[in-house]
Length: 178
Image 1 (cartoon, one colour):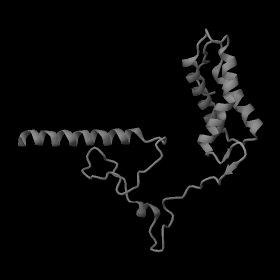
Image 2: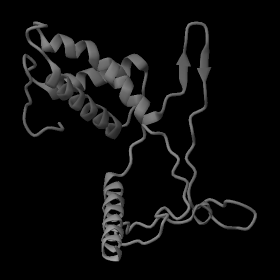
Image 3: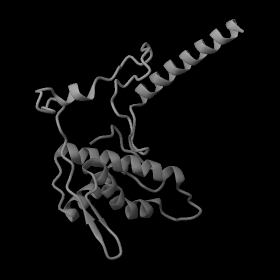
Image 4: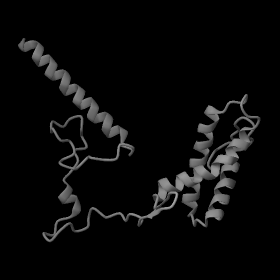
């Protein structure tokens, strides 16, 4: 049980129980072998999905919120799996594209013949972004990423504060020089 109390939304009596049952059904149907931790993560994801659905539910347009949720939970479970494991297969009208699942590489792995590690080759990230005066706070680390990818918001906010502070200092210097 994830939630401390029984959680109700619209005509749905127990959100967690419904999500747990939907997760078990989805895992059985897709033959997914999930650890207890993964199953808990899936149920939590489904609970959040039901919450998001409840925010846009209009009782005037549908007589049953539960029916809408039941129709969508399997798709949300598939979304969770694609986020968790990555998508490896795309199917179009007459074409199927498949790729291997990416394998993570340890930063401690040897990067080349010189005996250095991958971490040495990438450089270091300056985690004290607010205090740093380096023009490149990421220490040469390539930051060209997918625009849809999540960033660590605390790092982004710290960098933004530092850049705003530096900009305001430059503006003050220009005003005193004028």
